[in-house]
Amino acid sequence: MKLRTIQRTFAIALMCAAATTTLLWAAPKVGAVVTVRVMSAKVMKAPKFIGASAGGVSRGDALTIKEIKGDWYRVEGAVNGWINRASVMEGKVALSSKPGGGGGASRDEVELAGRGFTPDVEEQYRGSHPDLDFSHVEAIEQTQIDFAELESFVTEGGLGGGQ
Image: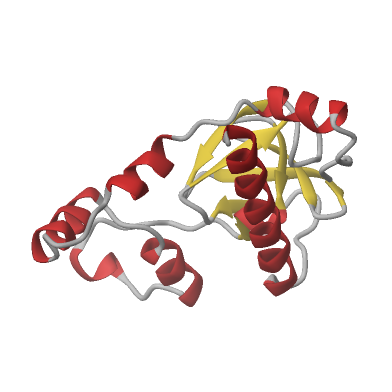
């Protein structure tokens, strides 16, 4: 049962990554700064989804591209390693805490700020929807995958390279 759940989670993650990758615009160049656009992302030691992680980055973190290999960027910043292009957007985004943002925000900045719930928004949403069961969401948020262990599983099972 646990193996099947891991397989489904992995398949869904790969499908989402592939779908997102096809929707992105032209790739940035070596030396460009990219900003993490997802809530959190793993920076990998090698340019593939399955394998050892070099660490994690969070939405808004700025990374500098040092090398490009297909849909993977070797980056330096909060963590050094490889990140898939689906997790980042080109450019450095300056977020503001001033009312009104202290100047106009670009479409990309609005999109970046709009992803995910802040703790305050989540609490307000829960309060206005007491009939909803959030236990499954909480369980998913707590799920941790050891990517080195997953890589061994894929290799031993002959499931492919995961790139």
